[in-house]
Image 1 (cartoon, rainbow, N blue to C red):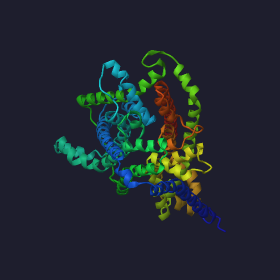
Image 2: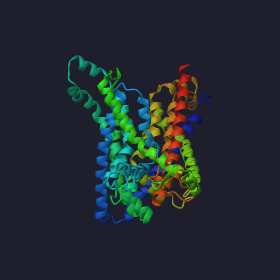
Image 3: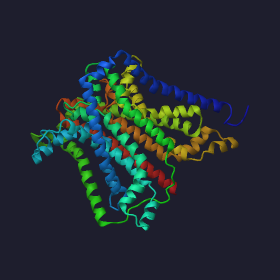
Image 4: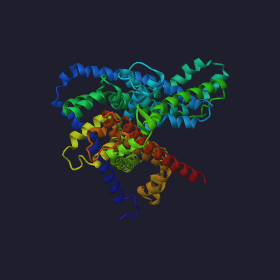
Length: 535
């Protein structure tokens, strides 16, 4: 028997681990999705698609998503330019403020607009504004609040790594800025920008939180699916709508997969930075301040509503709403959310890192198959995944438990942390395992002593991503929650239906506080790692 740890048993252990991961993905991703698609056989597909309500909801979804995407990307691109390319102060502060909407559920954005601009809203009363916010306008505005931060982060990352050398050469040659944009900037942005457009459109198209809260009679496909499944228990009709919700997500997934495979391999010789310009920097500072103020308005309103007796009749300070909210079970449901978020963070991080370790460090056909299934959750909207889990797991021992919500959220948010780990592990020296084999050092020991320490910052970011998204999601869990395992985010819908907006605002603040605390802890942990590495 060989004394080297890379031979015999370790190879079998590695193969068994990979087989276990493949089986887990088949059961948790492929199986539920196939179960939903098979349910289409029981539906009157032609009748559903031909119905006026379905067609109008489809048009509404496409129109709102297209408009919201256009506005989100335009605002986000200018904001990203101001943050990345100008010489303004407080760029980090602006970036943090503008991403705060990512820490609360999408339904909270719709509720914030109702409180601000509804028929009895704060700004409506203060400024004497007329007109209703409900319908198309409200859905677009709420969608922009929800999707704009995501578009900003993607665009800022693209602009940050653009090579500045061509611009310097163009300036020396006297090429005007308009020609520079058409000849340098636009070709560089074209392919990444298409990915941003697809991602933003899909995010808005598949969201039901904003239109559910502020859409009124402007029904979108996700809201229609929610009404059919939750209200009418019509699973076959819900499966048909879910299949249509998959279309833009699958298109975005395929395009992103092709674009990623062809990836831009250009070497950034010099980062493009902005020179000081009083006029440009003044505009950039004013624009960033305005956008951050608009983004922060709903959160400020949540604070006000949480600590008044009753809006708008009695605006004096009170803790009564908070006490009443806790008496109605907010504390118990918050505990559920924290358990779910911590469970998803632990399971999701271990699972996605293990998958990335095999796919990035062990090339082969089986690794490519694991990679494809691992990123496939990018193409499955939360509502579709939730319905799939209802159809696949109903009657099983985990149905109706916290374990079910932990599992569905892990699968729902698996792809992005997996890609974080995949990219980080792929950048490390690929000869480590071969050198270890020569020295009699096993792959698992290299993983423990080399790979994990080298990717600690990425691991912390993965934990943060799983936690934050699990705390605020309302999509996949909507079909799977019970009185016992209900997460606190779903209380926002309950309180809004009861016209108890003060309680809904307080719940939004609770979620924001938990997520912001987690973000701060992760930031401190990453900063500590960097300090130790520099010593």
